[in-house]
Image (cartoon, rainbow, N blue to C red):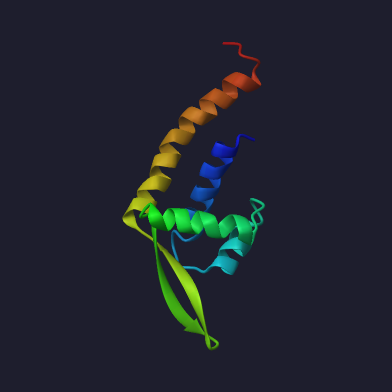
Length: 104
């Protein structure tokens, strides 16, 4: 799979994992893993990139004597998911065309 396409899909998967509830890295991996293979070394750069893009915010919460980073989706992150869903219809049309061998 094209690395840029995969990168974009993983970004949306991460945003979707925190869409309804704030979460932390390990839980995000658990939530996504049944659908997409993702490791910590892949997740944390994605979270940093999404934070820098304004798609999520981070807060530190103490848990069992340690600080845990919780991620919260922003309005910009929600809009990014909606934009992806709108664009996905076009991607499906392209997939359909390719899967039929380019026939009309």
